[in-house]
Image 1 (cartoon, one colour):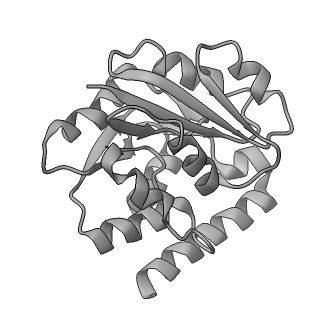
Image 2: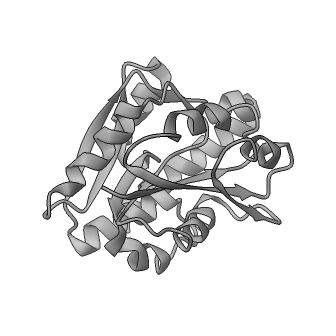
Length: 208
């Protein structure tokens, strides 16, 4: 199996190293592409310590655009997308996301946290389609590049693609893993604003 890993990052200098250490050396990963999405901290400097492809965007474009940019650099037959703020990522989690794609009938996997932290486990039980940990076959790259993400999160846009194309998706439990919440990163007020926008995306997806 030959897979490309895409990691979008915005102001993740203190967290992305842990993720890169977990991805580094995995037997399925042939390349790691980090898209530095206009970070205002030392994310790029931290990433430069690792043997990865660093793509610097001059200004913040958002996760959807960062992923699309990353896809243009991929050469693997499979793609895995990982958040830069994961806590507890291990080789076995990467394998668990990629291995089901060896089935010709499987198009995408969706990682669901279990046994990490209550707050992140609960969020993914409520809205599993918002998980940022996914893997897919490279044959879907053009479909993702053509997604209209205006007014939607990337995850909701991917959920619509799955629905429209009737893609076969397998949910994968990722045990003992979580991520840093927006409230922890941005503070309660800004983090709550972001979360309310996320819930709005969910409602737009389900009722449009």
